[in-house]
Length: 313
Figure 1 (tube, rainbow, N blue to C red):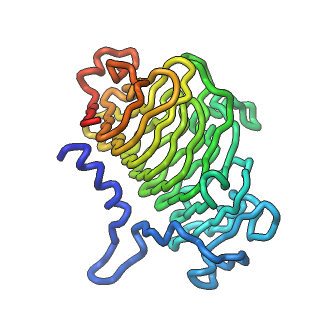
Figure 2: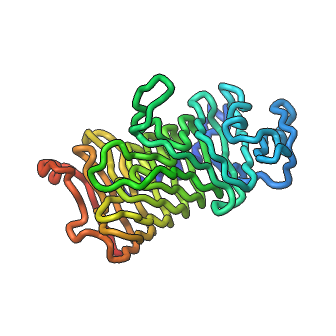
């Protein structure tokens, strides 16, 4: 099957029911209801029914938690029910991690211009033991659990922008390492390595991703639909860096009906992995793409092994 067509099944994968005979074992899909949390005023009680599985985050203390991480910590390990974390307007300056033990969590903001989660770590920063944290742990928000979804939030890394060739300047705003995630109408802002689309199947719908160098990278199998990819490159940069290293690996990035704009000149993608796979279909370009389109990551032998397609602009 053509990879582009196959990648469209990412969405369907997020809606598959896991059944045994006619008995539904658990909710193994994401629905539109998982993105809404209307008319909730706080007082979280996990054992009090479906409505109470909403946690309100508010910096003024009127909700269940003043911080996003505090709300995540309220969700019990091994959770099997959707928990919606409604994040009130404000700039939440904190690093957040959703651990692998806490699936079925929704982050719901008041719109990406009003609800912001922001931090400033870079790969060259050191932890409390004096060890360099690396790109993986630089993320402002890291999601390691399955069935995560986000709506109406800005994920931001405010570390200083990187110039091409700079060492240790990777600064991730959002890392997705779990399976079956949906990000809807969110902004993901940074410079180098903004969105670490690490692993799993993910769907980004009507999002805004800003960066300069490899600002979408990883080894996930993801569909980006109706998104804006905005470059803030000082000279040159690249949009996507696929880490696919085996012809048997089913990962890759597919961009459908997206718009690429901004500053600098860009490669559509760089072959981070020897079998990198990226598709752009029916996308709008704003004259900032380098004519050859693709970079071999300094290894000409990768040119014959990467999988890259451009369809009707």
